Image (cartoon, rainbow, N blue to C red; front, side, top):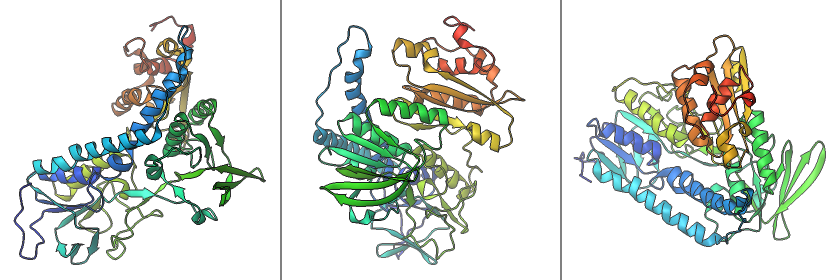
Amino acid sequence: MKDIDRNADGSGGYDLIVIGAGSAGFSAAITAAETGKRVALVGHGTIGGTCVNVGCMPSKAMIHAAEAVHGGAAAGRFPGIDPCAPRVDWTALVNGTADLVAEMRQKKYADLLPQYDGVDYIDEGAALLTESGIVVGKRTLSADRIIVATGSRPARPGIPGIETVEVLDSTGLLALPERPDSLIVLGGGYIGAELAQMAARLGVKVTLVTRSRLLPSAEPEVSEALADVMRSEGIRLETGLSYREVKVQDGGVALMIERDGEPVTLTAARLVATTGRVANTEALGVGVLGIETDHRGAIRVGPDMASTRPGVYAAGDVTDRDQFVYMAAYGAKVAVNNALGLEPMRYDNAAMPWVVFTDPQVAGVGLSEAQARAAGHVIKTSVIGLDNVARALAARDTRGLIKLVADAKTDRLLGGQIVAPEGADTIQTLAMALKIGMTAKALGETIFPYLTTVEGLKLAAQTFDKDVAKLSCCAG
C-alpha cells in the first residue's frame, strides 16, 4: 500500500475519514478512492467486520453443512433411496469454518487494501469523535467529511437472572469447540430461526423460545409454514409468552416462562440469545457532537445518510436503516456520493429483497399484506402452496408457499414472500418486477422456464384470477 503524504502532526491530508473496516467501511473507502480521493480507513475492530468474521460467512457455512446432513436423512422421500445419517464432528466443522473465515477475511478485505493507493488503513485502536477531530491511538485525524461505519453487536435480553448464567450469542455458538447436548434459543427472528435449525440438524436438542411467533415480521402464512417444518424436524417451539427468570440448574440453564398465565420451566445445557443487536456507538462520543441516536444507539440518518451533525455521515448496522450486509455496502455508496458532492443519491429500499437461510428458505420483497393496508392500498392477495409447482413435486419436497400482494385497483404488484428450498434465488425475480412497476397480469403472462421454483411466481400471479390447479403443465 502506497503511503499518503501526511501533515507534520501525522493527521494526513484526507478528503474523507471512514471509521470501521467492515462491509460498509470498505465500500465507502473504495468508492471514494476510485474517484481520486484520499481516505483514512480507521479499523475500529477486526478487519472485515461482522459479516465475514462472525455473521454471514460462518453461519452460512455451518448452515450448508447442516443441510448436507439433513439431505442424507431426508433421502428416503425418493422411492428406492435409503436414508443415511452422516457422522457429525462438530469440532472439526467449527475449525474448518474458522479456516474459511480467515481465508475470506484475507482475500476480500486485507488483500484488497494494497490495490487502492488512496486508502490509508489505520489500525491503532478504537476511534473517538471530538470537536478537534478523530482521535485514534496517539494521533488526531481530521477531514471535512466523516463516515461512521462501526457496525453493531448482539444485545443481551433483560431477563431477571440472566447475568448469573453464561449466555452464548450467535458468535459464541458458531465458535463453540464442542457440540452441546441441548440448547435454548431465545428469539424467533432471522438469526434465531437459522441457528436453531442448524444446531438441530447437527444433532443438538433445540428449544426455540420467542415472545410472539416465529419470524414475527413475516406474513403469518409464511411464519406458520416454517414453524411446521421446524416442528417436523424435532425442534420444540415455544411462542406467545413472556420471560420470567433465568438461572443455573443441574449444570445447565433453566428458563422460566409464562404462557396464558401459567408458568413453564425449560431446561438445556446452554442458552443462546438472538434477541436483537445494538449499534457500536457508545464509545465513539456521538452524544458530545450532538449526533442523534435511537433506542439501540443507532445513528439517525436521512435519505442522504447524513447524521444530525453537519459533515458526519453513517452507513451499515450502526445506523437506523436496514441491517443487511448488501444494504450496508449500498448505504455507504449513498453516503460517499453525498458527502463528497459526487452523484446525488438517496437511500431507497422499496425493492430490497431479504432472505432467511433456513431450509426451506424464507424470502421477501416489498410490502406485506398488513404493510400495504397500512399504506392505504386496497389490496388483493394470492397464496399457493408448493404442491402446485412442478419443481417441488419432482423434488418430492412441497414444503412451503408463495404469497403475492397487489393493488386491487391498479393490479400493480406491491410485494411478496416465499417459503421454498430455492426461495433466496427466486425472490430476485420478484424484486425486479417490483422495481419496474410490473402488474400481476404481466407477471402471469411472462415466460418462465419449466421445472423451476421461480415459475411459482407466474403461477401465484395467475392465481389472482384463476385456479392454477386446473391448468395442465406449462399452461398459460
